[in-house]
Image (cartoon, rainbow, N blue to C red; front, side):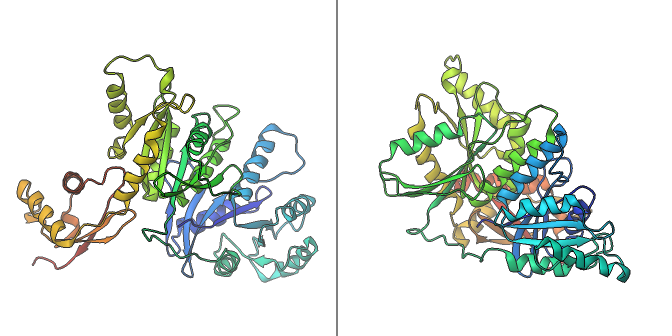
Amino acid sequence: MAKPLVAIVGRPNVGKSTFFNKIAGRRISIVEDIPGVTRDRVYADVEWMGRRFSMVDTGGLDMRSEDVLLSQMRRQAEIAMDTADVICFFCDGRTGMTPDDEDIANYLRKTHKPLLLVVNKMDHMGLNDQLYEYYNLGLGDPIAISATNMLGLGDLLEAIVKELPPAQEDEMEDEEHVIQLALVGRPNVGKSSLTNKLLGQERTMVSDIPGTTRDAIDTLFTDTDGTRFNIIDTAGMRKKKAVEDESLERYSVLRSIAAIDRCDVALLLIDAQTGVTEQDTKIAGLILNAGKAVIVVVNKWDAIEKDTNTMEQMRKKILGDLKFMSYAPVLFLSALTGQRVNNVLGAVKAAFEQYRKRIPTGVLNEALADAQASLQPPISAGRRLKIYYATQQSVCPPTFVFFINDEELMHFAYERYLENQFRKSFGFQGTPIRFILREKQKDN
């Protein structure tokens, strides 16, 4: 189920990043940084009052400047606001309201998004009079906080939760569920072309749904077998103007994050001519951390000179570059010519079935016993890891709980071994699997 997105915007130096880092760094309930997005943390998952939402920090807005860097920062913030469900507009209570604040307020009114006016740096009672002038912006009651001193943050988070869209039940019934399929990847890898090919083959398209993000288009359709899909196409991710412009790149990743968060299965498109790039690896990491099923699609295969071993060599190279995702099926196709495109939906359905596969407890523990018989659990400081039994806690992705004697005795290498044994026994191709450790008793 997708998490709502909250954007933090405002002119430079009003304390946006200080607030963001306090929320992300102090771990209010649940806070999870997404690795590999940017070197600084611009995106975090938060839980407050039982609601989960994602928060994105933006660069300082200057609505008038023609400076190239500042105009790029403005575009970044616009993208963030377009993807957001709630916008927090930060002002500086020490300096008071400025013409720049008024310019930003005028812009924000046009977004028609829920807005919260936040006056930061309200560190002492003497600044309270400053608060009232912000009513002149016409954005409702200002919320006074001090991000540095952690004052008023609970009130702000509570206000954010009240503005979030209603929570939706996560439905996964066999007959009712629509497979959410996200096409993600770098710009110009063929996401739109593949979307059009997939839809062009089907004549039972139900409806187009306006995209929830600036560059995403949802299309609901049914294949010839009666399986319902919703394709989330992240076409139109703006290409970087320059390689050095990391900050613009981060919002291409942000759009991918929004699509990944909503999907069941992600198609990670790779350009056959360039192979796996650093950006591809980042997006693959986002898919893994989100716990989504995945298929690696190598597009533009028609442009590659081939011999009898080319495909297998490329497959090994891609899975080597994405070694943390070695369970992913790899498809080679050409969205331009339609070559092998007809294999995609079958692979998606297969990955989705693995994603929601449930293993009976008895069968699971038989496989666990066989794995331990083949390779005994490790010994550390004279004590051996004991795994009493395991059970499957949930699906999407398959998640297993191991009841053991001591978490510290579970080495990463043995956990990886158990994962490999489970995959040999049960498949799970195309889906991550997760392990949770619980101590049943301590050895004396």
